[in-house]
Structures are given as C-alpha cells and as structure tokens.
Amino acid sequence: MKKWQTKEQLTDLLCSIVQYQSVTGSTAEIAVAEYIHHILSQKEYFQQHTSHLNLHPLEDGRRLLTAFVRGKQQNKETVILLSHFDVVGIEDYGSLRNLAFHPKELTEELYQAKEQLPDHVKKDLEKGEWLFGRGTMDMKAGLTLHLSMLERAIAGEFEGNLLLLSVPDEEVNSSGMLTALPVLNQLRENHDIEYSACLNSEPMFSKYPGDPDHYIYTGSIGKVLPGFYCYGKESHVGEPFAGINPNLMISFLSQQMELNEAFIEQLDDEITPPPVSLMQRDLKAEYSVQTPQAAITMYNVLYLKQSFKELNRKLLESANQAAKQTEAFVKHKAEHFSSVAKDFTMPASKVNVFMYEELYQEAVARFGQEEITRRQNLLVNNREQGDRDFSTLLVQELAGMCKDLAPMIVLFYSPPFYPAVSSHYDPYIQHVIEDIKHYTNQNFNIELVNAEFFTGLSDLSFVGPVTSSSRINQLTTNMPLQHNGFDFPEDIMEQLTMPILNIGPLGKDPHQWTERLELNYSFTYLPDILARSINQLLTGSPKRQ
Image (tube, rainbow, N blue to C red; front, side, top):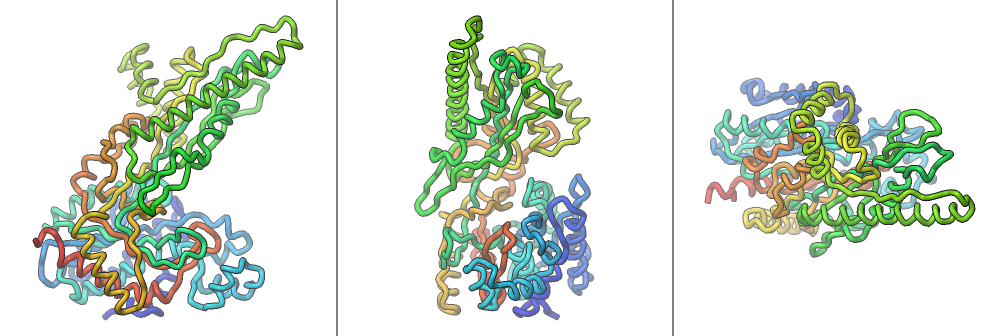
C-alpha cells in the first residue's frame, strides 16, 4: 500500500525525517539513516528482498543507505536517486533553536511573530504554503520525494529499476558520496544492472532575490579550496624589523583574493561568484611576545569549465602580488624607522612563493624521499585533525624542513574538492528536459528553466561528466592529503561517469534560520514531474538505442 503520495502524507514524512537533528558529524546523522532503513524495511518488497536494502559503513562509523527496486520489465536500465540527509548547524536560530527541527511548530511560532520578520518572509508565511525548519529545503524534501518514487517503483509504475542512494556528510567533506562510489560499483555487479543516469533532487536556488523561475539543472558547479600557508620570520616584538609577521603577509593575500573579479567565470547566463575566505588565522598556539611563525588562509573558489592550470595561474598571481606588497610595505616602514633610529640597518627581505609540489620536491632533494615519506607517515598515524588542519600540518612539516626559504607563501589544495560536471549537451538528457518542460507547462502551467549548473554544490560532482579538459591529478598533485590518509578516487569516478540531472523542490534561504520549503509545487506537482522524468530516463536510455 502506498502511503507517501499526497501532499499531506509527504509533509508528514518530511517532518518525521527533519525531527532527526542530523547536523553533519552528530550522532543523529547515524540515527536518521537507521530511521530511513526502518521505514523502508516495513515495505513488503524489502521484506521479500532483504538484500536490496542496506546500510553501508563509512570509516568513521557513519552509514549511507541504498535501496534497490527492480522494475516490472526486468531490464538492466537503472536510475540512481541521489540525496543527502545531513544538515548544517542551527546556531543561527538563536532563541528558536529548540524548534529548528520541528517544522510545523516552528512555522506556527514564526506566524505568531510575523510582524517582526523581514517582509519577504512575512509574505510567504501569510500564504500558508511554506514550511520552515532546518533541512526542510536542503535537502530532506528531496529525500522525501525519492522515498515516494521508490514506493511507486514497488507498485510497478516504472519499466526499469531504481536505486535510492542517500548519504551523510554532503555539507562538509562528501565522505558519504566518496564511500558510496565503490558501493555503486559493487551493486552494479551484484544486481547485473547498468546505470542510465543519476537524478538528484537538491532544491532549486534562486539567482537573485525575488527570482520567480523554477529551475532544473543538467550539471553541478565545481569548487576548489586553495590554501595559502604563510611562513614568516619570527622576532621579538621589541625588534619587529628582524622578521616578517605572517599575519601581515596574510592581510595582503586577503586584499588580493577576497572578491577578486579575475576568478569570476561567465558561461552564457551562468556566472560564478568571486572567492571568499573560509578560514584565516595564525598558527601560534599560546600568547607570547614572539611574533607568530606561520599563518593560514583558505578560500572558496568556484568554477565552471576553467582548467586547473588556469586556476593555478590566477592563484599564484595573487600570491606573488601579496609577496611583493609585503616586501614593499616592510621596506617603506623600515625606511621611516631608520630616519628616526640612526643606527638601524634594515636586513634584506624577500618573500618566496611556491606551489606545494615545488616545496615537496625541494624537501626530497635535501633529505631524500625515504625521510619525507617517514615523516609524513608518522603524522598520518598520529592524526587528530580534520582535513583542513591536517593539510596545513603536512605543509608546515615541509616548510619547517626548508625554513631557510622563509619568508614564504605556499599554495596548496585541501578537500573538499568538487569537480564541475555537466550533461547539458547530452542528447539523451536534452530529450528528457524537453519532455518534462512540455509536460509541466501543459499540466501545471509552469515554465521550467534549464540551468546548466546547480550552484549550491552537490554530490553529482562525483558521478557526472567533468567539464574541464584538465586531468584531476593536475590538482591532486598539490593536495597534501592525497595518499596521506585520503585518496581522491579519480579511477572509480571515471568508471561510474553517467548522465546527470537535478530536479528538486522549491524553497528559499538555504543555510539560514529562515530556510523554508514551498509545499504546493514541491509536494503536489513535483512528484508527478519526477515520475515522468524517471520514466523518460528509463525508456529513453542510450543503452536501449
């Protein structure tokens, strides 16, 4: 019996999932996977096919979920329904934190206080078709819709097969999706199936405030996380010109990188936002009157089709400019100081700039490959830090071995890395897009707009066709974590590459305390649009042609 089909049923199912406070890294992230497994295990289909429903462990004890339903025609064609069940934190909810995971109660509470809310939020509340709460939009509504599609598959509504894949950790490192890649490979073999396409249901993102369009996406934006390790020359505060403060170096890097228009990439109507800093601090553990030895900053850089060579060039240019500005600033201040302190002589100072790979090879030349490997293995075996901090530690170790090169700026990359992917020009996907646009217009009087890139970042990056002509190892060569407790799975990604599509619910304000889901489109129209899309993906599969 189907019980996840009507707007009311889907709303109740969504609320039951949202109540699991699955902030990335929390124990509730494990609990929500177990809950989804539990409600699916109540279905007669999975009681008869117990091997089709599984929880798969990550190395840290979290689990991802797969649920496979074979279609009525016993075909090999299979559509993957991809979602994530983790959410960001709720600190931004303030006094409403206790209601953040209780959508109906939170929506009612906000309605009572609507006069105090921004006008655009107040207007949505008054319409009565919006549900507030963390995860309602991003992306437990998409997961709810996929469960509804799985129920339809069990009822025999699709000719091909569906494989639901729901993962943790999408909001931080995507370790859930990276763990899922070999699982997908194994399931393909176990069930003797072929993957026709991967359908995600991340929510649509507006391109500007008040944007009225309804979007579907044929790709997903790319992201790199470059880090700049600034190794200065420490000094006593009484002799500031005896060294160079890395905090000064990092301040000029900030001027070069923050909102730098050189990184904006435009492709037709798609435009990437400029870089912003996600981390900036010195690495001095305790207070003293010695200046810090090193500082670190990392930037969010989004791209569409740029090569990694081009990205490296722009990043190195920023680092070189920051180095020159640091040198000029210190020289100018020293000249002023020397006009007052007659016996003062300013030592020459040059700030060197390296890529991580260059520093690594320099360390190997000085100490030998065996010693570098030994030191890195020692750090890996005693690791306590997260990916960003451990990447920094690996760079710090090499910089310390070559400290005579200081002051220096070292450019490197840290996870997470999301390749830009697109099926925009795939005839198979274009056929599906045209069909569902026509279907949606004819049946619901809604014009769907096809955007090439989903701009919110998604796990489609690990299964879709990459847009850049660069090999991924051109980036991972400068990723200290690669082969040091982390391996970016380029080989298996190439084996699993498939057409991709994102058709998701309508919502607003992801990652904000006003996050909300519009219920009428999302739970009245979208289920039929998704079902139509799945049928088109299965019947129009290139493997049938």
